Amino acid sequence: MLDHETQTFAFTPAELEVVQQHIAKYPDPKSAVMPVLWMAQEKYGWLSDQAIQLVADTLSLSFAHVYGVASFYTMYFKKPMGKYLLEVCTCFTCGECGGKETLNYLKEKINADSDGISPDKLFWVREAECLGACDTAPVLQFNNGHYVHHLTPEKCDTLLENVQNGIMPTYERIPLTPQESKA
Ligand code: FES
Picture 1 (cartoon, rainbow, N blue to C red):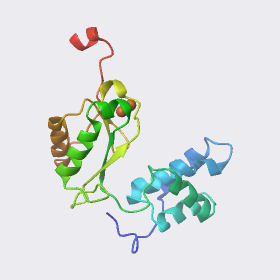
Picture 2 (picture 1 turned 90 degrees about the vertical axis):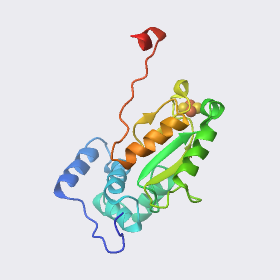
Picture 3 (picture 1 turned 30 degrees about the horizontal axis):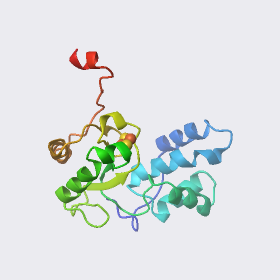
Picture 4 (picture 1 turned 90 degrees about the horizontal axis):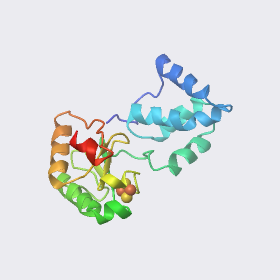
């Protein structure tokens, strides 16, 4: 994790091109604030005041405006968290199918602190609302990206071990019909 106190905050020319592409999608450049915040978070790991100021300066917005957006949405991190985020759904279906037990299992497995973060800051486990994949419950979302379906303790163990070895979860296609699953 970068030290935000000593780090210089700037987008590279290539990143600024991407910023321009985001701006071009909207009638008002202000609307690009979310993807540009996302770029800053991806680059710096979390959104310190310095990272938020960079986004504000890049889009000619006030710090207060950008801070307001960053603090409203839970996918923006306002303090350093774990490197890999595992969000376990504990909503209705997943809750009934072992989501809560999975959440607790993962937290115990990584020896999570009260924020759900492992001592080495590699993993961060937290609860999620319905991820829209209730038919494959219980489910988790890895780093705001791919889902891991039909979670079991064994599947959680494999996931943690793989990530520790640099193997990230990839897209998992779920068969839509019983015929398809036999094919
Ligand atoms: S209840 Fe978990 S994905 Fe919908």
